Image 1 (tube, helix red, strand yellow):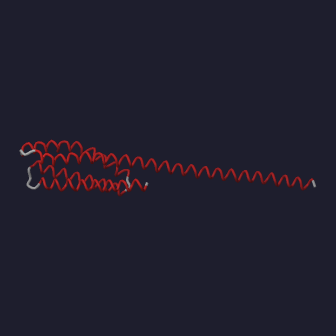
Image 2 (cartoon, rainbow, N blue to C red):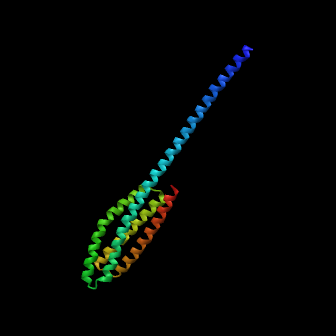
Image 3 (cartoon, rainbow, N blue to C red):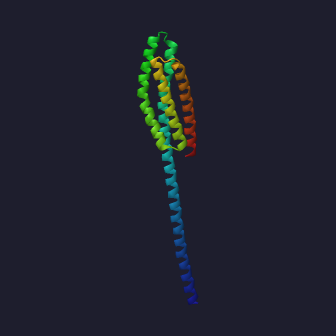
Length: 175
């Protein structure tokens, strides 16, 4: 009887040790999985916040540029004297030069942060702004039809900004 008691005790002890080891392994694996999941979530959140900041900065810079474009239209609506109008348009063109560098920087950050559709939309926005600025240069030179071409370029810029905003929203929802 003593032999069977010893064997039962050994078997019970071994089972307890094995169960403890299995539980420890399971807990360690669960902790590892949870840590990896937490790291993925934190990484995704960092990417999301970085992209959000980049998108907001670009939209802000584009908004400032767009306001200057609107003021060109105001100069045509409010100033009857061609010389006064030309002076005001040249002043706005000078302001736009100052606004273009921050816009370009913001585009480069979006291109860096991605994803590709947002980067492409940002690049298209930069190209639309450059086209509007070129059209405005022709306005200051007094080229025939330049004001209408500028109006068209300004409209393209507005639509391109709307497309970027939609693309950025989609990118934020897929991170």
